[in-house]
Structure formats: structure tokens, C-alpha cells
Length: 283
Image 1 (cartoon, rainbow, N blue to C red):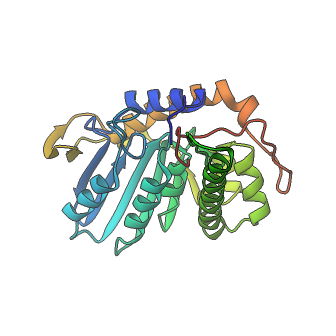
Image 2 (image 1 turned 120 degrees about the vertical axis):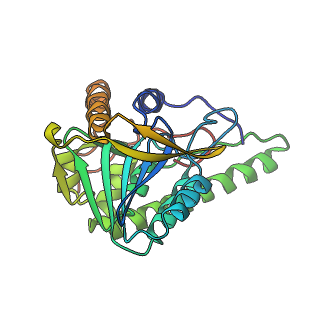
């Protein structure tokens, strides 16, 4: 496989996700309030030496969940442009395996494979102004050989992408309750959804507004590739969510007209706006 340039929307989404980091400024952070654990996923999903060395790996998430293994419930905060599909599905399954009630909060953006992770909760809450993005997975291959060999390599990639798409479709359908034909059309058209649209289409259970009066300071444990370090954070998660939503609005204004996809259930999608989330890999 070879890398290819990321689509413009993903590049911008990744840039703002990096600027609006978790309350401790780390891609993956975990905190504990009494018996409730809080997991923050505020970066691209997966790691790649060339493309995104600071992304969130499944290992980061599994290690974070082990730190709060005694918690009775889990809150997951998401602000991510997406990333590598297999890393995202692994994170989705790791969160689902947590024994106890799970609530996902989409603070700013749940795009691409991050939209799959967002559906891992028993309850999904989208902040006002936050956005969802779903689309078809994409990948590529560099092949050298005879015409038959190149054709065979291409056929294998196509078959793999179709299997990946089926897997993602199953997760979307089982969690939203929408018809497979609707979800399929929205994926093909690269569909951006506001919080209200995400609720109408079954991706989120409710929409919430931030109350500045409820802001509070808390101590969190930040996870990085080098391990965990406790940091006393003076930046409230609620303030961070406000910034994330503001950036999400900026992003949506640039791409809404071209990337919103079908606006009504059953309306067919087109491939005109379809775009990969990561070069050389699905979603």
C-alpha cells in the first residue's frame, strides 16, 4: 500500500482537534470521579510514523481503562477527525467491553471511524454545535508486476474495502435503528450531521448545552505514548468542549454545502463528495 494525500476536510479537522486538546493537552486522558471514570479521546485514531505519530492507539485506550478498572460507570468524551479503521473498531470493542453503564459525549467532532467509537456507549450525548461525519472507507495499493498481477492486487483491495464497509454498516444500523439503505446512502455521499440531524437519524440519544456555571477544576491522569503522569488541570472540560464546538462550527461552514449528503431518509447518495479519512487505509 502507498500513502496518498488526505482529503482537505480531514486535514482541517485534524488541525483543530490538535489545537483543542483534552483538558490536560494529551490525546488520550483518563480521570476518575468517585465511581465514575472519564475517558477523553481528543485526537486522530491510530498511529503512523509518517502521517499521525501522536494519534490514539488501541493500546492507549486499553491501558487507560485498566487504570480505572474499579469504576462502576464510564463517561467517554470525543473530539476526533477519525483515522485508521481497524484501530477504531478495536477501541470501539474495548469500550463496549467495559462492565457498567457507558455514556459517550461528542464534545466537538465525531468524524469517520470516531463516529463508530461514539456509538460504543449505552447512551450517546452530542453537545450543541458538535458534528458527526460518516463516509465510505477508502484505501489504495501500489503494485508492480504483470497486468494480471496488478489486477489481482487491485481486486483484493476492492474486496477488503467492501468487507470493511459491510462491518461499519452493521455497526451503524444496529446502533441507530435506521434502514441499511439510508445509512449506505449517507456513507457514500460523505454526510456531515449537526447535533439535531444526528439525533433525528438515531446516532445520538440527546443534545446538551454547556452551562458555564457548572465549570469546575479537576485532577486528571494524562496518558501519552511514554506512560501516565498525573497533572492538576486548571482548564475545565466544559471550557474545552466549548472551544471544540466553536471550531466544529467553523469547519462545518466550510464544507456543509458540499458535504452534507442526502437530506431526507431514502434519498440516494452520490459518490461526488465521497472522500477517504486516511490515505492507504479504510476510514
